[in-house]
Amino acid sequence: MREPEPADISDLSDLMAALGHKFKQPALLQQALTHTSVTQRQGLRGQSNERLEFLGDRVLGLVIAELLLNRFPDENEGSIAPRHTALVRREALARVARKIKLGSYLMIDRGEEVSGGRSNPGMLANACEAVIAALYLDGGLAVAKKFIETRWTDMLEETQAPPRDDKTTLQEWAQGRKLDIPNYREIDRSGPDHAPLFTVEVEVVGFPSMQATGPSKRAAEQAAAAIMLEKVKSLGD
Image: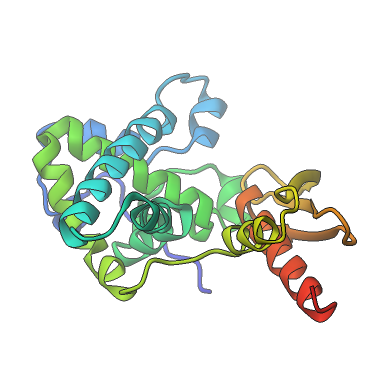
């Protein structure tokens, strides 16, 4: 994938248009776009987007929960929960970030630039959370909610049935056979901080353990569960 060209950070009018909000405090948006690689190098603690990420994650979770309850009034918590997880995870945030070309506005240091930071899913997801927080702080919940509703609607409508993941399927398989629930263990982590690789091992009593690697611990666990499911199927349970 081609690396986005950096935008002029002094002119955020196009980004504000994509966000649907003109900031009264543009400094909030600039902070949301500032990666720790910049502030650490300059010794400016507390001025990166990390704290905003924390807040944006909570705002997104609240808004998505309300959207799901309104969109699927007949579903119980067991069905709503996996939908919520799918819509607030890194992949969904990175997808929205790409749509609004957020990567081109990020303030990152030269090292992150060279290593592809502007298209890194984790960095994009974190920045998207920070932008949601900036919208909330500048315009209130209504402004943040409008952005989320606009940008998440397609994903909300994509699957009529609640999504199922391999970890859930494997756990239900084990419980159906009165086995202990699968046990996941991180056995290795490699790569740079901006693009780590996690290796996870999953164990199910009575079967050989399986390993898988992914860009996050969650992704590695899902991949390991998928491999284990294939293994138990091939052994005929």
